[in-house]
Length: 219
Ligand SMILES: C[S@@+](CC[C@H](N)C(=O)[O-])C[C@H]1O[C@@H](n2cnc3c(N)ncnc32)[C@H](O)[C@@H]1O
Image (cartoon, rainbow, N blue to C red):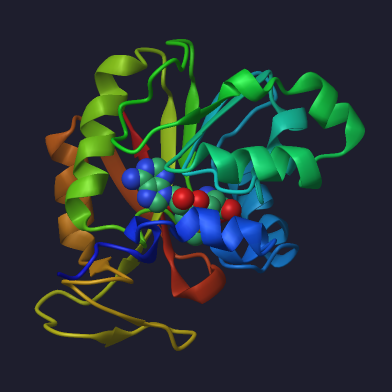
């Protein structure tokens, strides 16, 4: 049976974490990713007053920068152990002191257990690139009722042109697939998923690591 992603392999996190590979689990590019993504979040409306939910936060590659920049930071991931490794090894002392581990919550179903309803901004960077399209649909459908004050979600996916079938080579060479990891969808599919869940989504043509495409989605 083909797994939806490498993250679904039994023992994947345990083995990689035991080898000290928490940065590799989220794809490396430890300095480049925040350098590119943080200004885009500001450009797309993230403010210091926001209560931010970092969905699929991994080893806090972005979270370590974002947590000190916003009024409140919460994170979810399929592996809490991965987030805790980021908390232990990647945060500076001030951020570690101010970010309670209780805000790092394991969540495999995008149901956001224990996250306060006060979230105003959500981010899912390089998460739905790794998962079948129905995961994006589930996440969006759950976000809407859980967080009534949510202003905006930003997320990334890999896109393939309308009508394309089979594997597709992204701008920086990554080959993505409609039916297995790493996953792509069409822009039309992404917009339709957002509309069905009660969001208006917009595609943005920024140059992102590995050729991902950024969308904003507003309730
Ligand atoms: C490429 S990493 C990106 C991590 C982080 N967003 C960043 O940019 O550094 C993808 C993350 O998605 C998480 N993930 C995979 N499936 C998930 C699921 N069903 N629910 C929540 N997180 C998931 C993985 O554990 C991993 O941390």
